[in-house]
Image (tube, one colour):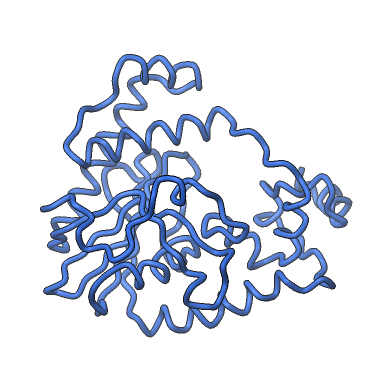
Length: 258
């Protein structure tokens, strides 16, 4: 299996891959439910990353390095993870299980090429310039017309793969980065703390992505509405960066969302 991104038509630069979109796939669960949230969030400075996020970033970097055949955790990385509250034994188990699950999935679908940390642009499919993201792993088998879109999760809260908005956004954007039209698209979550060394998967077709494109386009353009009102819910509000200035904050307090 090649780990060269040679199948990509438009490989992303590191600067683009690390940028954050106003409408990001990772926050699609929020802005599709509450169209005012991106506009409110833009008025506030970006919050600093917490220890869990920093640990996740470091684990992702090591996961990527190991998939490309490089070494595992280095002493300085172990020390840094310890400062973030992640023990070495836990970090190693997350990485080992993550690599095992990923390699098993790639073997199952005869994936011949992979690319990691790849900028994808689902906004291009719906006429938006503020909607992009970075896919943890894209894998292809062009002969079998298979595309794998995988997200590596290091947290404890189980992430459901079925109809996962983040993965659907990545898949929509990935269509413009490959050189063939896939007949099968495999969405995958690898989350060792929740699911061990097994990937959670959902197979979809282009018809599903076509319908999703229409739906996500409607939700994206709804965020432009200056008269949009908050649509509070437990899921959308829990980690919203605009909670402190949201008109629905009283509702959140009354329903014990704090």
